[in-house]
Length: 146
Image 1 (tube, rainbow, N blue to C red):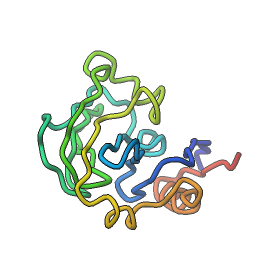
Image 2: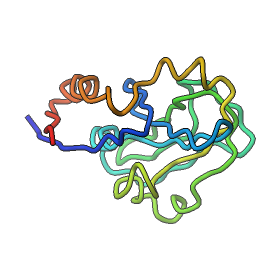
Image 3: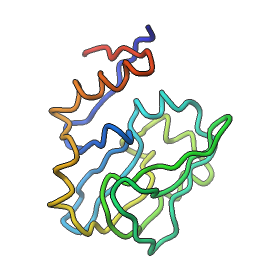
């Protein structure tokens, strides 16, 4: 079994099934990205593109796409809202998603439309490790605990 010691920052909210995270920056602004485990499962990301500015997305639906070695897959939105910003760095440096998934590798920013209702479907960083470990086992990856 492959061992992996990912970081799951405590200040983030995680959608385990879709391997995405949300950071509430303000009541009307949420930054979203792909988890370190999601990146590990997917493999090398060669391109990452968010939906156009102004696009309204629903929780669990596509907020963007990533191109992998042999496929293009959707990045699912952890929350519903309107895309208000893209990460401009990813157009030229998609590897930032790998290098700093919870910092410089963020994908998009949303103006959330149902934050208080939908956050119930997300796990806070303090409670996510067991769910992530169960998800990782599906891919024959063992989460190494700090």
